[in-house]
Image (cartoon, rainbow, N blue to C red; front, side, top):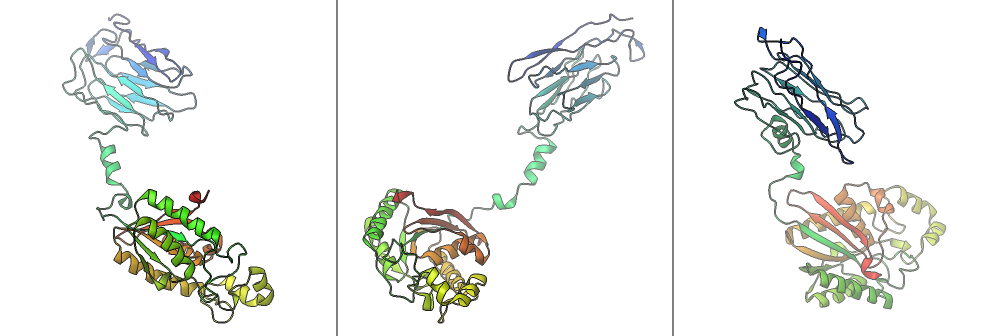
Length: 375
């Protein structure tokens, strides 16, 4: 009969707060190995658990010819189990959910020819086979590490195509600048393309200068395109002069025509045209009183303008100086948001927003209503 224990190894449980000692014993009095008398556990298995800091036990036990290693992990019921005969050990890990490493060594009198590593739910599980007659090929794999294992290959195979497309080149990037204030802006009056076409106020010109300074420091603007209305042309001129660029005009960037509501406050429209206002708020197809432009018509116009400018400026960064409704509409279309989202966006005078347009037709909203340059 064999000695009760030929070799007892100590396994440490190392935690973030400090290692707690855990002992792995191999009691095997009178064990039979390969049909004959053998030492009772020629080589006690060492189980090393780098687990939680609360000192939970890891225990390894079993006869020499049919060794079982059982690691009973954290107290919350999570377990790591490795079981199998000495000549064909399998390691099955349903490991601790707290991300700590668990290591199981499976030495044997007749060593395993292949020590397989099985990853458990993304945690590191390592199986080694040092033995009296060592394994000829002990492959070691770490779960979660780049390795030639099935888990890694599967993870690569299911990569989302949308995040790893073929190189489409630089997008057309539109930096959307709302014009500076006019005398009507602080009063919150409807000011579209069918009204008096006011110019910038003193505050509006100062806002344009601040935007110009910020954009000049950024140094990425390659072209400037403006709505034809006075307030946007004036704002664009101030910025373009600072950047050393010319200003192009695109009629598609003009503000919505608010018809008979031009120059009125919201409260005044509510008082004078309540039914028309309610219809306008309820449907993007409704027009302002007096034959103004509906939001649906504005969106159709802006989509065509967007497509034309994207084609003309592929891969470039372009400053578009325009108005509240055009900017909100471009953002809404980029997001695929419903028409009523126009009423749920704030867009301050001289604010900056950014939308990028890619060659595959997708868009990305990168910035909305930035006024940091005005503070």
